[in-house]
Image 1 (tube, rainbow, N blue to C red):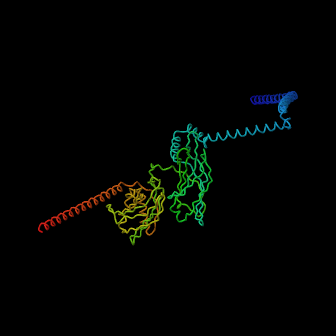
Image 2: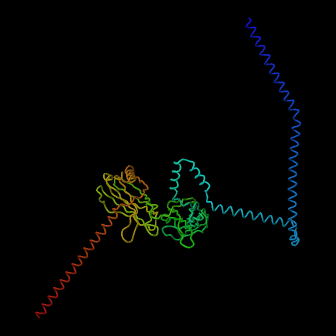
Length: 483
């Protein structure tokens, strides 16, 4: 019992102490509130006094500026007044005119500065700076990738925007050179170029049209239309439209910076054509790309007929000094031992054309059992009046080409797997083998041998004739002696 009474006494003491603490907190809060209410009027008065002082200061500043402006106006009017009296005009009118002239001069100066800075800083300079900063911060791997991209874009010579319209009634081709963009700079002091565009048709190169020269411009807008008259639709299949971009030079011949060649047999002239195309660098002969050849194979097992159609070629290597070629295609069939079967076949010659269109077919009779043993040798040559044609490139088709030239093997295999059906494919021309040169040398040697034999025969005939003449003379002498 004593213990319980002690515990109750302790609890009562704790309760009284907590109540006293709460009462003291409430009294303190009430005191703070009273003190704040007593001090509040004084604070508000101080704030109002400060705001009043600030307003007075603002008013004084405004008054001072007004007085200064008025003084300046009076002085300006006093200066201009004699001139105004002579002209019979009020002074404020002259001041307004002077202000307008100053504003115009400032605007012109700002515009000139903007144009000058725009020319000096080429398009995309800020982006390049940001990219460079990223490279400095980024990893080494990212830098290597960007270097590779720059190498890939070294051949980029800008873009050209053009429009084509063909009129079937008048047989006219309208070519509009709209604009060029991102042309490479040729003048390294200014970082600009003086471009113009030549437009012509291959193989004739006549007529040749030129746009106007745009000075110091990497993104010129031409908007000029040229008309090729008397051009039947059938003749467009053998024509190639050329857009050649030049940099104008007043004191020497203009330098070509890029070009775009458009074979018209790849364009649908039924409606207007308008598009952007990348300009290609001018071929200086160092490019190893020889061109492409389109072929069709069709085999009929029952009759043993292999029909080879030479359809067209594109982007052939330039072989002549004039920057063109006179291509034709030569076809030879060889057996498994490398001996030629039958006579070689040739297409017609397409003069001055790097994108020729033939659509000529040739038939070879081959048994079904021999189709896996023979090889078809196809060579694109440049025709030359003196001597034989120079080979541009060649391909080989056949079952035996599964290691040497896999596209030739695949084309041949697909033709065998799909009898009576034409299989059309493009092939990239390969380097012509030195056998072509050896064949030429053999032919020359054979010709030389024949010539030597003919000479020997002629010499023998002459000797025999001389002997006969001598014999006849001797006989005549003997007859005269007898007489």
